[in-house]
Image (cartoon, rainbow, N blue to C red; front, side, top):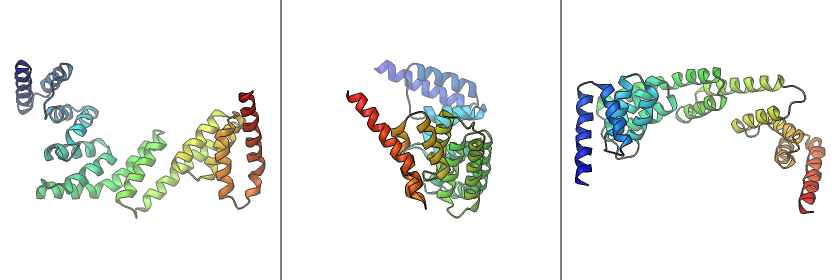
Length: 257
C-alpha cells in the first residue's frame, strides 16, 4: 500500500510538472499509464482534459473536464475550463449549463462572472446556429434537444420555434418521399416525429399505419387512439381501432391455444 501511494504521488507530481512545462503529450502519456495501472488522483481528469485541449483533441478534453467539473466539490478552475472548452468546441448545451454553473459559483471572481455573462449572451444565437448545423448533418433528435435547452434558458426566443418548425418540415418532407407501400421506414419515421412532438398527427398516423402494415397491432393501437382523441371527427378512426382490437384478440387466442 505504501509503494502504491508513493507511485501515485510520483505520478501526480510528474503529470503536474509536465503540465506546468507545457509538455502536453507527456501529460497524456503519463495519465494513460495512470489509467492503465488504476492510479487515481484528484486532478487526473482536469490535467488530462487541459492537455487534450491544448493538443486540439476537444472530445477527449470534454470527456475528462466534464468529470473534473462534476459535483459541488469540484474545483472552480475545472468548471471554468470545462465551460470554455464546451463553448469553443460547439457543445452549446453543455456550455450553457457550465457557464450558468460558473455564474452562480461562490468561488467565481468578477472576471469569471463577467466572462460567464458575456458568453451566455452569445450562447443563445450560437446554439441556434449549432442546431441548424446538427440538423444539416441529419440528427433531428440532437438538434431538437439543443433547441429545448435554449428554450429553457431563453423562454421567449422566437428562433427556437422557427427552428423546430424547420426540423418538422424536414421530417414531413421525408414522409412525403416514402414509398406508398413502405412499412418499417414509415413506422420509424413516425416514431421519430412522435418522439419530438408526442401529439403530432402526421407522426402518429405514420407510426400507426407502419405498425399496422407490420402486423404490430398492439403497437399501432395507442397511436390510433391518440389520433382519435385529438380529432374533430373521431369516428373516422373507429375502423382502425376495431381492426387492431380484433387482431390482438385473435393473436392472444392463438397464443393461448
